Structures are given as C-alpha cells and as structure tokens.
Amino acid sequence: MVFIYSMVIAQPMPEGGSFTSLQAVMTLFTSPYAALAGWIHYLAFDLFLGVWQVRDAQRRRVNHFAVISCLILTFLAGPAGLLLYFIARLLTARTLTAVDV
Image (cartoon, rainbow, N blue to C red; front, side, top):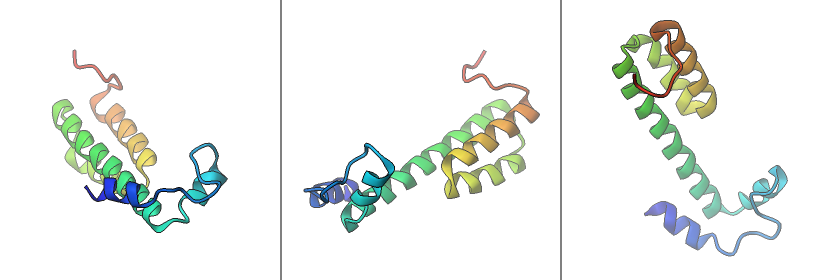
C-alpha cells in the first residue's frame, strides 16, 4: 500500500527521470517519494530472494549455516547474495538446476 501511495504521490516524475539510463534513474530518485518507492521495491525483492533461498536450501538439504552468509549478502546486495547462494548450493548439493527431479 505504501509502495502504491509513493508511486502515485511521486507523479509527475522529475524532468528527465525515467528508467532508460543510469543518469535518468538518478534524476528520478531526486523525488523523495520515488526514492521511497524504489527502496520498498528493493527491500521486497531482497526479502523474496531470501525466503526463496531458505526454502530451496531446505528442499535440497543445503547446510543452514552455509545459507546464513548468503542471506546477509542478499539483504545488503541482492544479486551478489544470490550468486553466493548458487555457489554454496553447488558445493553442498552438487546441483544448479532450478527444476526438482
């Protein structure tokens, strides 16, 4: 709800703000409401990835202690934490497939 409210309040976008380039995204986030919407989006993405990692690790019997550092890194830097999880999964479960056999 706060995300939708932030997106509505942030309209109109700052002039030159869009998702077409890094500079345009930086301009877009000069609006406090657009920055809030972006922050909520990033947190939701990171939390979704964390939940998926834990469930996937349980299903594949990956050591929980190996997943903890992945979760911390996922919260701080989503894609890097996901990459670390895939490496941990490869080393412990010996699989990278996304499909259960």
